[in-house]
Image (cartoon, rainbow over all chains, first blue to last red; front, side, top):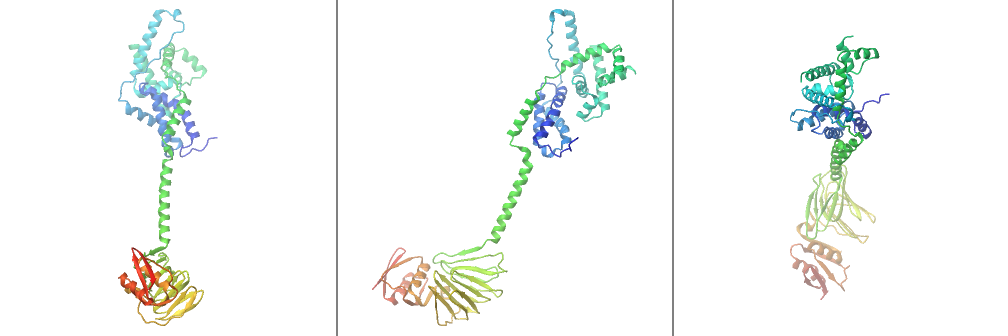
Length: 171
Length: 298
């Protein structure tokens, strides 16, 4: 049974459930869009604080858009369109002795290329693509989060994939 | 199913088992999988949802519960309105009080244009808001009334009530002393001892619960309006009390019979002359220090 949507979210329980539902997605969105330099977790938390401050004015079904827009604006306030470079997390090879050095080098090169290629994607492509590939989200889930059509998500992601592969091959 | 569709479906995490087999046979399968595996490493550090929530909740609570701002503002406005209405209601229904101190006279115009002249150390209390419904006031002291024509006009004192229609009269009530003098029209006086109707010149006098008959006088207004207090067979203590009120002094005496009657008057303008006026007829001597006057037998 669906509960009827509330016209405000000034209830701790409701607020908490919204937090649990969207905080990770919002954080990931901010991360893929703006990188980690501007502390996506802080901005995510700030957006929720603002959501609570305005809880009387925000109906339940508008909470998500409010969060994403607010967090995005918070980021933009600080972010003067620097180039976003997403860092590959350092991997510690499990059995370094068993891996031949050539392979390690290739691997390193590949990662470097990938990093560059991702930096070469448009912002929209990058966000949608990484949410899809890294977070394992389906097209329609991403569409719902970003308030765009599934078709647009599909286009962005497929476009991103094509561009990535092309760039990696070229580099 | 062509290659592009398979890749699309793979991207959307939507391949069924047969499609998956087909996808695996694609020539770019290895490179796609390789890419996919590498991409996983772009995953951001996982956030601790509970900790993040606690952060948010603490910061929310430290910002003084802003969410209730709207409600708080509304209740503030409501409270102010309630106070304003309350104050308005209170003040409009509140009785108006006029008061004179010793040696002071004051003239008051009532809402219906009736005039009241208050003698020294007197108080009247009346209600402006329902004046037209009931012309009723409370008097403590002495006052002269010029009542505009209209409904019943009541002057309440602790000893009795004076009721008139449209007229001029003087009411003097001091402790157990009540004197009502009618100057124009008709005045009804109702007290426990006696009920009577006064015609112009008539005086109603009660001292210590006893009705005292008085002679008819034909004056247009009480003498105190001309700054003079006049007494006709009035106990001496009332004269002294009036003197104290008019000059704001205190009079001390002993061995003097203060219940003997006094007939005469004193002015309000000159204390020396006034003192002589009240002492000479009784063959008394006075001495004055500051605001204390001592009376002695000669």
